[in-house]
Length: 249
Image 1 (spheres, rainbow, N blue to C red):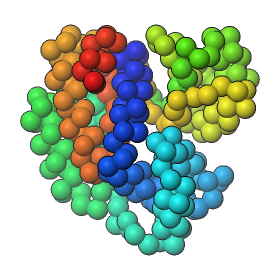
Image 2: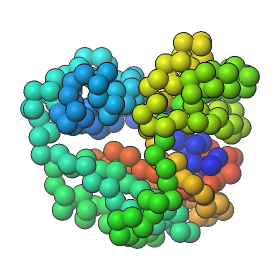
Image 3: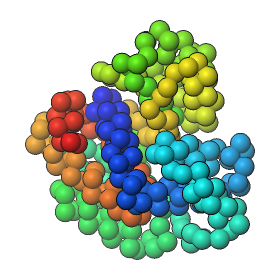
């Protein structure tokens, strides 16, 4: 799972830089608005909204932007036609990929996602073809150079987390989706600073890639995430840390 979790951290750091361009904020705002419309404006009663808001905060999205997005959703204004679609496919070396989309034009999104897969040596698959290879989980990532294993394990156990995985210089605390907010709060109350806390798709097994296939995989991942309609991209690759950081850089 090292390649998966490490990529998530690198992507998060890149996202904070990309946020300055406004494109990421637009995606985050859309997710908040749709969540508020579908489940209500009270984040305490709407898990999807709470997670969308937490993710926006992790990318330093201004509070005013978040509140406006919630108000748009609660009032039924803006993004009214947006729907959530999940695409599944295969990348280079048989890497399984899940693409989550929010779109106001299903045909446009389908054509764009299909074109990206085709252009980068991948292929779309039928619904369910790769979804079974992943589990929806809550993930809290902590810098292992700042917090010791005993402290993280103690907080995770107290919070009722499912597992703690160490990968190099980071810990990943895994939870059931509905428990993410509660586990995150307990960890924070214990004085542990986390780098990110979000819902994710964790692969049950991974495909180890050499540098050549890793380079191809990063290209298709970047292309998918650059798409305006794409909200999230998950994959089951495993790339050695030094190669992954070199390519991400």
